[in-house]
Each structure stands twice: as C-alpha cells, then as structure tokens.
Image 1 (spheres, rainbow, N blue to C red):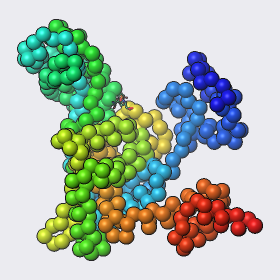
Image 2 (image 1 turned 90 degrees about the vertical axis):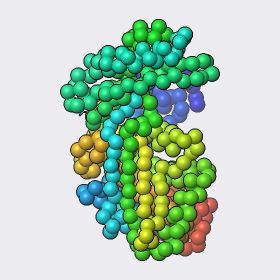
Image 3 (image 1 turned 120 degrees about the vertical axis):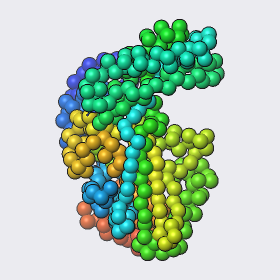
Image 4 (image 1 turned 30 degrees about the horizontal axis):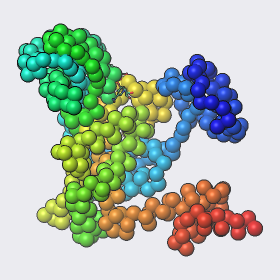
Length: 421
Ligand code: NAD
C-alpha cells in the first residue's frame, strides 16, 4: 500500500478514475490493471450499476455438466467455479443416475419468510393474539406493496406470530409468508416487511426494529431423489462405502460440514452461472442442516432391495429468474437459456438435482479410489501453470508430476527449470 485507504469520494469517480487512483495507491502494473478491467462479457456500465466502487470484473471458468436427466427432461448444466473435478464429477454421476431414469425432484413452492421484530411490549402473549386477529389487515398492507406480484398469483399468503425469549427479553416476531413466484424475493419481501411495520407498532404498542427476509427458507424446499445402479457404481462395496460415508456425516459435524460442502460445490456453481445470490443459498442450506439443533447432512444415502444406491436431498433453494443478477448479467441470461428453465421453481429443482449428483460424485470417489486421484490430475495442470509453465509445457510438466506421483509446486518448478535449461 503506497497511500491511505481513506478515500471518501471513491464512489463518485468514474471507473477509469478509480482504477488510476487504485494504481497510484497500490502500485498495480499496467498489465494488472488491464486484467482487472476485463469484465468477462459484462458491460462496464452494467457492472458499475450492480455494486459500488467498481474497478472491473472477475471471471471464473464456465463449464457445462452433461448427462442430466431431471423429471424426464434433458439439461445441459452451466457451472461457474474455480475447483477442478466438480464439472467432471457432476457429468459422471449424472450419467450413472440416467440409467435408472435420472433424478426426480419436487418442490414446496416459492414461499419466503419476512420477519418483523417488535420489542418493548408489556404483554407479548396478548400482542400476539391481537396481531393474529388482524391477519387480513396485515396481509392486505403487505400485498398493496406489490400489485404486480399479486396479479401473477404471488404475494403475502399467510402470517405467523411468535413470542421469542432473547438476552434482551421477550420479542414478538411477525412472519409474513410470501409466495415470490419467479423472484428470489428478498427485495419484494423486505418491502412488505417494512410496509407492515407501522401497523404492527399500532397493534402491539411496541417498537419495531428489524424488518427483513429470513434466509432459512424452509418453506421453499426442493426434494431430489435418484437411484444409482450398483454395477455402474463400481460394485456392492462402493455402494456400502457411500452408505457408510453418509452414516459418518450423520454422526459427526466435522465430516458433515465437508459432506454438505460437496453438495454446495454443485449448487453454488450453477447459482453463480445463473446469477443467483449464493450467500442466500449457503445461509439457507447450512441453517436448514442445523434445524434440529444438530448439524446434519442435506442428503441421505441408502441401499434398496436390489442393492442399488438410493440418494435423496432436501434443502431450501431460494432462486429467481426476475430481479437480481439473473436479469441483468448477460452471461447469467445466456446460461439460463442453455439450462432451458422456464420458472424459478424449475431452476430450484435443477439445482437440487445437481446438489444430489455432486454429493454422489464426491462420495463415490471417496468410497472407491479416494478423491485425490481424480482431483490431483486436474490440479497438476494448475500447479504447472502456477510456477510459470505456458502452452505445451503445462501438459508435459503435469504428466511428469502425475507419473512421479509428486503433484507439488517445488517439483513442477524443478521440471520447468530443467526444461528451460
Ligand atoms: P426484484 O425486486 O428485483 O424483483 C422482484 C419483483 O419483480 C417482484 O416484487 C415483482 O414485482 C416483479 N416481478 C415481475 N415478474 C415477476 C414474476 N414472474 N414473479 C415474481 N415477481 C415478478 O428482486 P427480488 O427477487 O425481490 O430480490 C432479489 C435480490 O435481493 C437479490 O439480488 C438478492 O441478492 C437481494 N437481497 C437479498 C437479501 C437476503 O437474501 N438476505 C437481502 C436484501 C437483498
């Protein structure tokens, strides 16, 4: 850092001015500036509107997972991520599932929860009763904010009021259940929660503080299931291995975190490719996994009477096709077109299917040859590139690292140096 980060008017500058200032402050080279300025198909002016203090773009590799058959329909699945083996694993496992009819997915509808926190209430139980009795008024006030959503069959459909104990005493929480249609719904729900706040204060005599969506989207679930033929899995031992791996995750949060991370490898990669709020997806997934008070797997693996493996996944999937980046990012729009989904719930179902398949890909590898074999093959190329190999050098070095079973940077550097010499 060659200057102060206290730059009050940074947001007022144009992108070019910001980059110039950044270069002065940090000593970025012209080449580095050029790299950052590339927005990977996202027009600069769109990028500049999406977030604040924009100086450029950040591109991830975009891969297509093949072989997906979901609810009888074929899908090519775009995945944007940096991790090797994920796209290959998804394609491989989707092919196994295809032989037994593919993945079947259902959903609970696109309902999100908006929370209104009221404090300073003398008789919280009485306040709760009053709020429940004014249900229609509260829902009407919420729905008045979004006539378009209501006209499409969505809107605030129901209400839940709960009294919770907190370290600051009891609080009365009013929850709006909003059918968000094809929207992820955070803006829509937040607007409704804010709008009903004065009414909640009037009814309860309390003070409303937070008015915000909950990312524990347990009224917007997807359930995916698939059968994996035992021979295609590599035999009964591998099937048993996957069931044992699931039992491990079910019993131990340290394993379970990685089990669920493997699911999110797929869910998040499709989410990024299709312009979704992946922080919301992660928050929903992990809070749902913890809903019993213990952190649990989002999938379940068992053996059926034929000895085949049966997997099921259940998790929240708050995604949208209108609003957010899905509507403004040209690459996201192209990816949604590739995927061919017509509604947000169809997108949610596909992402649930990918989560299940991705989990199987990782568990199958873990239960058979171990994850590193496939992973490190792809990784070897990255390692070769990271020590400065270019063009054909990358494959030559990667192959040698694999042959020597030394997929390490120091060895890659040695080979590169010897090639140069
Ligand atoms: P939005 O407000 O841009 O779009 C939703 C609106 O689109 C609806 O209110 C409706 O009026 C309209 N609409 C048109 N056609 C529709 C259809 N077929 N179905 C449903 N609505 C239709 O976006 P949003 O989905 O309300 O909000 C999503 C954004 O909010 C994301 O970018 C997310 O990152 C952001 N966000 C998230 C959180 C959170 O998750 N905690 C909090 C704040 C903001």
